[in-house]
Image (cartoon, rainbow, N blue to C red; front, side, top):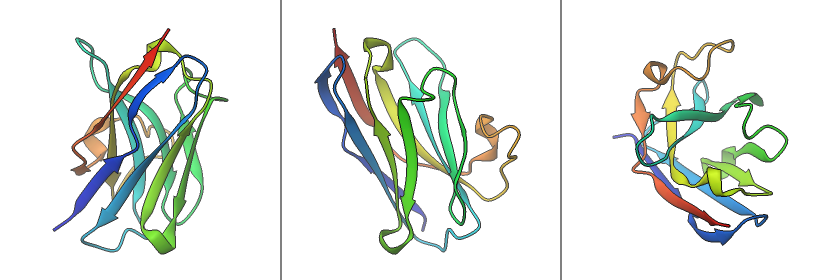
Amino acid sequence: QVQLVESGGGLVQAGDSLRLSCAASGRTFTFYTMAWFRQAPGKEREFVAAIRWSGGPIGYSDSVRDRFTVSRDGAKNTVYLQMDSLKPEDTAVYYCAAGSVVSTARPQELGQYGYWGQGTQVTVAS
């Protein structure tokens, strides 16, 4: 049974940093794409970043590029999202997702991801 478990969320001040973790288990993810999405109250879930498990990052949303960094540790079966220079508009529930067939050109499409975590809350105070 595939499990994705996020952790690392919390309440921070604008300008602070946080690192989210996504621990993956239940199968071999070598050929998977792992992604982070977020959902703010009253808004649709939106793409944040994606990384090939066997490669490197394949994309960031314009709103987080140059502030967030996605990475993975194969030995720990964990994907990370380093978030720097946080802004109040980054406040959301952050979700980890995994997909076996994800387009490099369109990693933001939710339907490509078959596995999702339960989410972790990130709140950025101004």
